[in-house]
Amino acid sequence: MSMLPRTRPKRPWLPWARAGITVTVIGLAGWGLLELGTRYLGLQKLVIEQVNVSGCRGERQAEVQKLAEQLVLGKPLFWVDAEELRARIETKRWVRGLQIRKDPPDRLSLAIEERRPVLWLVRPNGVFLVSDDGVLLDRVNQANLNPIPVVVDPTSQTDLGLARLVSAARILREKQQGFYERITELRDSPKGPVAYIEGLLAPIYLSRKDVTKNVPNFQGLFVDRLSQRPDLTRLRYIDLRWDDEVAVGEPEDEPPPAKPRR
Image (cartoon, rainbow, N blue to C red):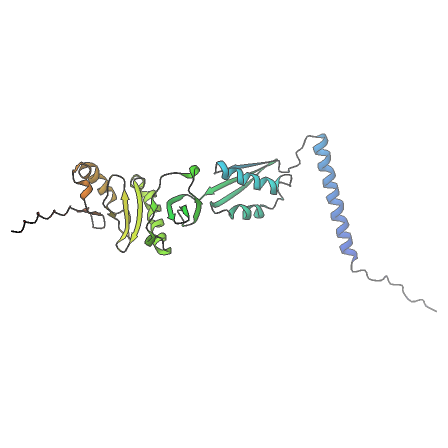
């Protein structure tokens, strides 16, 4: 009588078990080699032992330094969760961007790009910095007390009005910095942005389409002629919206005194 062939039972888990054992053995071998190298050959473990923060100073730098060290110190340099660190830092309103660089053997470098304020915004609950991309930043204090244009007029603090003034201030700072640094106040009006500068009481009407229009002409005119006028404080306005022309609102003649009645 012939015997039935013997067959082994199928084990679908066996390939996965072999793969797991192989990976474990390779991992243990790598760990062992790394330990031998660091102990006897002086190799570095490539874990983060220092964090370098650049691009900001003072309290902001200390704030980022403390947060980064809490999240990454002692962790493997090339396997650290950089995206979690990025998300935590970029939630701060004053941070515009962040670059993370891994510098072997043990340093993580963070380059911060700060938002730059272009306006002071005066509200009943305080004075705030407004960045060049329209983000409301910190309150004004002794640490950030740099003179920049102020927005005081409540009618200029609508979303649209404030957006227009932020754009105007940013363009003036980039293209006409000397004029921007002289501005003490900015207002929004139906005619366009209105600037007030030190040494001149009259409003300066700027072009809404090109806020820098005629600004160089005005700078030269003010230095050469306007600043020398004895009636400077009585000028009614300066209008820079016209093509190649600075319009000056001359003082209104005072009416003659009324004749006494007989």
